[in-house]
Structure formats: C-alpha cells, structure tokens
Figure 1 (tube, one colour):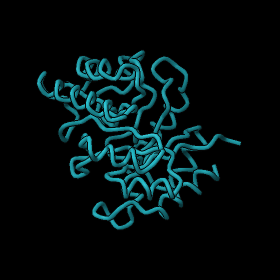
Figure 2: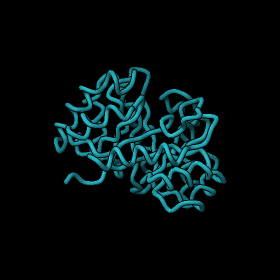
Figure 3: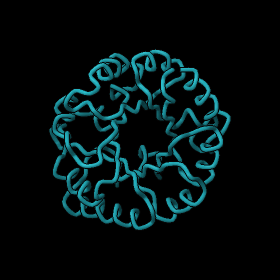
Length: 233
C-alpha cells in the first residue's frame, strides 16, 4: 500500500481554505494576486486563513511576477514580510529566485532562509525556468528547511515535463534529490497514474480546484475528486 499522497491547494482567502479542507486537502499554498502567478499575501489575509482551518499553510514569499528577487532593497522587503508573517503564526513558506543568467540567486535565497530560522519551505517553480536544474539542486543542497521542490518538470507544464519528473523521482535520495517532489503546473488527473507509479507522492493544484475559473472560489467537490484519485494510488 503506497502512503497517502499529499494534496496541496492554492488558497487566496478563508473561503478557499475552508472548501479545500472540506474536499480533503492536506496543505494550502497561501498567495495573493494570482494574475502574477501568486505573490506574498497581506498578513490579515494569512491570519484569516490560519483562523479558518487547521491545515498546514505554506505562504508565498514573492513580491512581483517573474523569478527575480530584485535588488538589495527588494530582498530586504521580502525578509521583513517573512518576519511579519512569522510573527502572525506562519511557519512554512514557498519561494525561490533566479539571477540574470538563469541560475539560482543564492545570496537572495540565503537571506530569506536566515530569517526563517529553520522553518520548512518549498523551492517553487523557478526551478522550471533555470538554465540547469541539476546545478540548482546541488547549489541549494543543505539550505536549512528546504524540504520540497514544486515543479512541473518544464516551464511549459507537466505535459512537457513528465519524463523529467519521472527521471528526477528515480534519483530520490541522491545528493540534491533528497527533497520531496511536489508536482504542479498544468497538472491533470490523467497525469496521476504515471506519477504515482514513479513514486511521486505530492501534488499541487490551483485552477484544477476551481471549475469556475480563478474568479470563482475553490470547489470542495473538485478537491474531493482529486483526493479520491490520489487515494486510489
């Protein structure tokens, strides 16, 4: 019997969070401004979600669209935002930054990590836009709290990245590949059997949880369908 797969759902507000929990989500990624692919939420929005559900919450640390951390002042703003969110009860995060060459912006990542004091965090889909996935993983090896990579295997989504995801799952446990693979980005129910067969046990959905589109709230029924498919293994 394979272990229960993690189902993470994007939540913009408390209504989303309650519906996702009712549908069987294990964890929420808390963001604002989905038009920019998810930015750091205001502290009151995080606090409302924290009060509404008892799920694990991973909070986005990202100030603008794209994968650049910005200049030193921008990184300072990120660090302050992380501190404010931690003071409000946040204890898990999502971030990841690239430099102008397409490699990991390790100084920016390390500044944020230092503020988190060991909190668990996900390196998000910036990995799908890097010039060298393997090099990024090796450079991030040993960063405190890094336990997950959110990835579609390709910048274009899971359809294009399926072979990469399966190959990386096969390397689990190697240097740079100890972290959990959390698959998201154009993920469909039809992808699940091949991914589960490869040993992947964590899945991330956003639009798939909202049959009415991003202007509509999360649907507990849609989340429930994913829960049932994942539980079938």
